[in-house]
Image 1 (cartoon, one colour):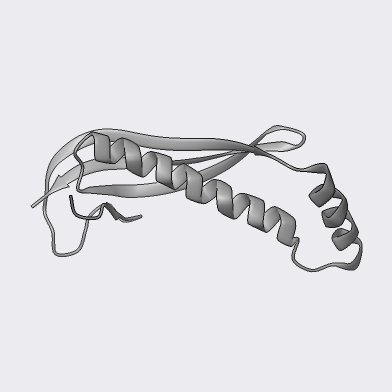
Image 2 (tube, rainbow, N blue to C red):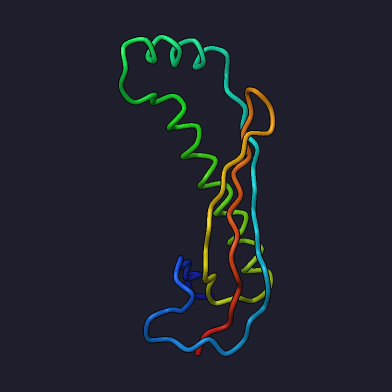
Length: 107
């Protein structure tokens, strides 16, 4: 199977959507580690990028996208259009990242 196309647009340039398969989604919940939380707190005092949190969220986004893509592949999709990402805090030290879009077949 060819690589799955992931697009934030509603169409794929040069391709025609011939079938809509439905909503696909993937999510993960990540919690902060106490060690990185301490380092991040110190970094907040002096300013700058909080690399510990940036890394945590980057990994969570990738995992959510991977899970969504796997769901699309299982449906037989060629692409996911309208791809979106959302993040929400579900506890003081934990966040959910969800990726979602519409699985489609292309011509």
